[in-house]
Image (cartoon, rainbow, N blue to C red):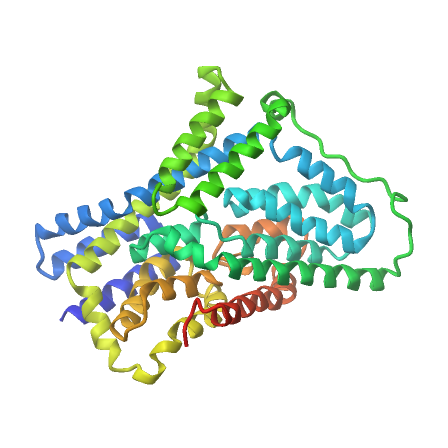
Length: 434
């Protein structure tokens, strides 16, 4: 009874989200509660829900304050000198331009928002691509690779994986740091290759500076928020926060790190109380939207685990997996995770599919953390910039002025290659023991 009820719950959840009959927030709350009542758990459902919410409170806190922090220092203009210097440094040599585009997107994506990354990077670089007649698919591919490889502790996939599997973010992220570094080497190597290909296609021979470099223009509202005198302070503060998260993630919860960081950033950059309120208001919508989804996911995972549906499903599925193949589950998921982004949106995968895979693997002796890490190698990380299930994909093609099919055909192999390289790196570095 329980395995069938659990399967039906996940099928209904996926169907409601993928068909867009319900928003993820609504589906993650209504579907599991209904399933729990149908299963006869009655008032025990409320206990399952509360247990799920309590387990996610630290993750929700970190995400909200990370968004507010990075939004505040971006408003203060912390990234402006870096952006302008990259634009001046790339000149008109296609290889430098593509490499610079990748670096710029990587830096802008520090806030964890793909939309912000694309909205800042593409308009800044597009005039240069157009003046030199460079292939705009290369622009789309370079920003997609940089954003896709940059799965930091406060990015959506990492938060979702932590929430759905009830694992500390540090246990997922820290072992993947060298793996991500190898992925970055691959990304910049491919950016260099794309730039060289463009040079050959264009017959490049012009000296740097022969074509004027486009200048970024800020609106009066943006200029009023800039605090150029605080550039180095904001840079040092950000480095200290990130270093604290990596070095002391087990001792100091990331939520506290970003809480304190946000307070310091606001007091230094915007000492006026009214300005502080406006900065929080400006970024609270994005933060609270994701916080709501995460809390709704707590309802789903709390009920699935508390009712025993998840464990019952896993026990039923264990019989179909040969014991000799159990140790290869993380590697197989790592290789498949990027293509799965074309089939599942992040909420349905991380909250509906991943917990079942993790429970099956756990009952076969495979640590849950390895399953979560395998998913992060591609599922809505390298996969999100080409997935038709995320608005960011349409933002990329819209800003670049290219067709979705052309973008997917050109960029998919590059992003898939990054996932394969990182999966192999996990094996070679011992993250996934064979």
